[in-house]
Image (cartoon, rainbow over all chains, first blue to last red; front, side, top):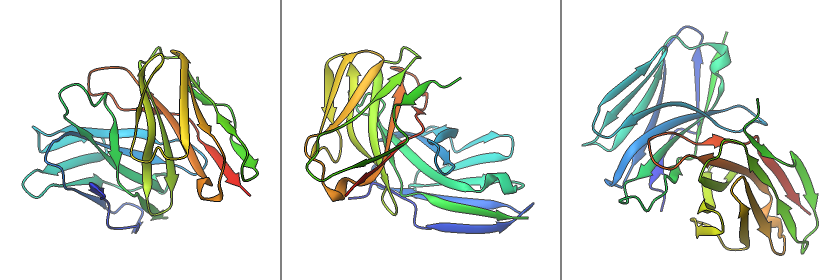
Amino acid sequence: DQQVKQNSPSLSVQEGRISILNCDYTNSMFDYFLWYKKYPAEGPTFLISISSIKDKNEDGRFTVFLNKSAKHLSLHIVPSQPGDSAVYFCAARLNAGGTSYGKLTFGQGTILTVHP
Amino acid sequence: DVKVTQSSRYLVKRTGEKVFLECVQDMDHENMFWYRQDPGLGLRLIYFSYDVKMKEKGDIPEGYSVSREKKERFSLILESASTNQTSMYLCASKRSGGHGGYTFGSGTRLTVV
């Protein structure tokens, strides 16, 4: 029962163009969403997040959009750079009234390749 | 300035061995987590701990146990390693409360032969 799904295993884009990574979730009790980036042989690093009460959050080249009615979020990277090539994971936090201890449910990941 | 340290980057163990994976964080975080990462499955939570000597099962705890005797250290134990436990293991920590994300270690690539 995958509550957070990234249906595209990979994405290839040209340098300078927009990269759009998608994520769907099923549990309406998720209250916070995060994106992580992972290079080979390294741990994931936090990229950007969004609260369920917002629909957009922007940080430099990275923007996350949340569509609660569709239970869908997306990460936009503009412009894409070769150094953005990595695995991107979306993650969701369950609002369990303080008993969830901040544990996250992750998607399967999308491999982004940005070509020069 | 490494903040979450996993003691081994690569490990090769034999089937049936007892395996210890160690994780240390220096940020005084209350919450610590063990995940495994497998292709096509993403990161799956094995166990987490919200305080010293406290632990909770994650989504896939079978075949694993954990120990947290000190706040900064969280150990994952494979009681009797099996080939289906070959994976990348990631430790993470997080301060209680707030919306902060995890800080991950660099991971341990475990191969069970």
